[in-house]
Image (cartoon, rainbow over all chains, first blue to last red; front, side, top):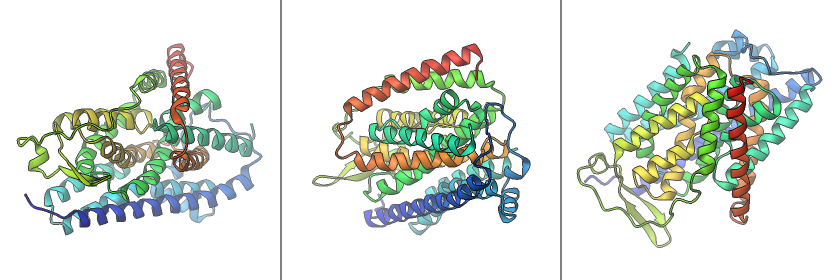
Length: 127
Length: 279
């Protein structure tokens, strides 16, 4: 049985934890900035989500969302925060690929790459 | 209702859900969709989109606290994430063809079963003997976790069964926008015989990845509205943070019973609405 040592494993987990926390905080900060703009501009509008219309095309994909946010759109800016939130667990899997590679656990490098492929399919491959 | 008021009310409602969810250990994610549809009249598809984002937020936020304690098993988690991600992508794809009434009934059934699930799976069970034929040994999945007197080693059992149950957990998560943490704990605790703390923390770790898999699909489909995702995420994150801080001191038994009753009632209401076609 190979012994990979508890230390390196715990260190990897600790770094993953830090990565996740940073991602959540960054996402919340961006969403908060968007929320302030959104409620200042649209706070007094009437809203109803009872009928499903779906988001406009510009808020459905990465390039559209980034364009909206650059143009100063509040909903676009919140959606950038949403993207960062979705990317946070994805980054953890990317991190695991490198972490397992450093530990030379090639089987788990492959497993992490498969998970990453599935996540990428959800983000880019689906319609 | 005007937008500012609506956002504030939604944030407050989500805060309570996140607070009680983390305090009772039952998770707040499962009640977000019924809260949005029943109390706020939100279409189920928008509710699923907003719920998914808040599920990623709480999982990632809480996971960072757990991993520092060295409880979760990253290798087991990553292997099972293949099953949950596949399930989640399938669920999100299938959801497009299921009428919202069907989704409401399914969510109602999930709510009923999580309300009726035994609250405390035995926390101090004896360590399982190693099973030399299992993948646990061959793939180096066995590990150890910090106990009161140093590290306690444990073995992983029945990996294929756990993998299968995880696929179902992912499917439910992708269909309904929930974390399905309860099913994940079931797979790791009961099927794979992992120690309770290891399965709870590893499952929490996995919830974010599972939700991220279907969140991409729902984003493309226009289900994720920034005006809903924002207040729900803020509320749930703040609520679960406060809940986790209070957890050490609170007497949660009565609260857990109360929350079960609420979850049960929401389940009945979702099924009723689904049958009546009012979703």
